[in-house]
Length: 354
Ligand code: AOF
Ligand code: ZN
Image (cartoon, rainbow, N blue to C red; front, side, top):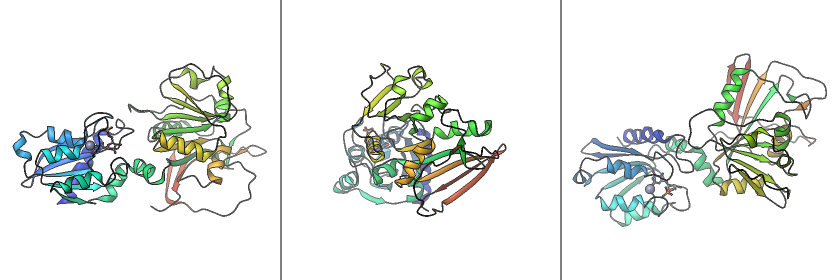
């Protein structure tokens, strides 16, 4: 029975998809006498939490007395943009709280559960844990690993090449892949590329979809090369934030969508720590080859998405992972998926089998 009601809460949580970032998706269901009396979700960042919305959907306060609340994530116990859900639950006389998973956010992390128990409420944790974890996979990953979940995405010819040379834009795959990539970008909180990709392709790095929070466009630009090139589409197009990591003292373009993050020495670990602090849960790294190889060399990746087109460049063209490093081993991928898109192919896989 618990599982069934938790599944309802998971479905409810999905109503917030795309609109709750940087907060997680959360759903709640209130049950009394084996009957669902109310449901609620966290629908938008900064707005009411799922528990409060469910409580507000009850017909009368008396209904809540002695009821059971099913909630996908541990109720919060702190004052943020919203007051603590744990206090509200106690005030309303709810008898039992069934929680999908504890909240890994250090501001909550077990404190909501402890508060409820201290006030005589029966608490059960861990119902449908796997499904609940997947609801907020990247949010959970960020808090556990203190860095975003990293997907390396590339588009290759059959001979593993990404472009003819450093200065020509790469048009490897067809329209179906273009559509897919623009949708796929919207799944992540950040899209990261190196400055060379910006200078040779002049992309906008936008995604398709209707999220209130489009992915942040992140550029690693050690020498400030793009800061000097104000006519780029990234500067002209203001539909998503643009964060530029640099060591350069070049003057910042005075544009509201642009943030320049200066570091004395730019390292991947430093960038990822900064992104984690800025609540980037997940990162879609679009290259080029050197950027991919830098992530690869430091073992900083969780998933690979490769689009392959049946074309050949050959010769001294740019390889997918470009590097002079000595190879140290072969990494087999897990959860491998394969799909045909027009005449191109998409292959993806994860580093671990979890
Ligand atoms: C809940 N129920 O529906 C959500 C929770 O700034 P605030 O007040 O909105 O708090 C945001 C934090 O609260 C968020 O980072 C996460 O830890 C938790 N989210 N908690 O009890 C909810 N969305
Ligand atoms: Zn809350």
